[in-house]
Image: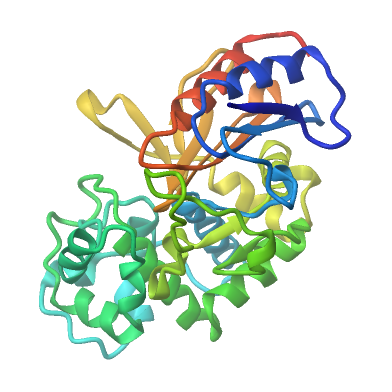
Length: 353
C-alpha cells in the first residue's frame, strides 16, 4: 500500500494536493516530490514501503547523473575565476599522458561538459564487469591511473565537437582535469566552490552517514542495493543530497542574482544553449542541462539513476518554478522521470500561484 503525506511543516494547499496526486504514479518504497514556486516550497512524501526511521524528505538520495550539473557548475566557477578556460585542451590538464590518437589532443573541457568529446559512455574495460555483476559498483574497480590509461588508449568515435554522445567517462575525466588545474581533489573543490557557498549542508560527493542515506532494493523489494561510490568516476555520478538542498540548488539557478557573488555568473553560464542535437537537431543542450521549449520560455532539466535509486531535477525560469523528485526503487522502473517532467511542464503552463 502506498502512503502519502505532506512533509513536516508543509501546509495542505492545492499544490500539495496536486503533488500528492502525482506521487501516486511513482512506484518505489520511498518517494519525494518537492517544488519551489515563486519562492514558496511544497514537499510531499510517500512510497510503497514502510516509513523509514528518518523522514523521507530528510534522507540523502543518490542523484546519479544529476551530479554532472554540480560538476559543470564547478567548471564554470573555475573558468570565471581564471583557474582554467572552458576551451582548454584536456591534455593540458593531464600532462605527460601518452595519447595514442590525434583527436584525443583536440578534446577540450567544453567538449567533456557537453558530451561532444567523442568518448564512449564508459571505458571498454568496465563493460564486462557491468554485465557480470549488474548490482555492484564496478566503477570502484578503477583507480585514477586506470581511468587515465583508459583515456590514453581510447580512440574518439568522432572528431571532438561534431556530435553529441553521452559519456560518464568524459565527465569523470573533467573532474580529474579540474583537480589538476586547481591543485586539490574534486570533492574538496565542489565543497569549497559550490555546496558550501550555497549552504547545501546535506549534500556530499560520495558516501556520508549511512543512517541518513536512502537505500534502494532489488526487484524482490527486500534485498538492499549497496550505495554507489563511483571511485574515480565520482564527478559523473556520486552526489547525494536531500530534497531541501535540491530546492536551494534550484532556487540559485532560478535567481542567480540572489546567489553568492562568485556563483552568480557561473549559474548563468550553465544555462546558455551550447548545441542542438537529436533527430533533425530538435533538442537543445546547455553546458550541462537539457533545454526544452515550454510556455513562456524554456525549461531545463536533468535526470539520474543508480542501481537502486532515481532522481529528477528541473526548473522553468519564466514561472520561477523548480521540481526535485527522488525515489528508491525495487527493480528498474519507477515512472519518476516521466511524472516529474510532466509535473514541471504543467506547472510552467499554469499561471496559478
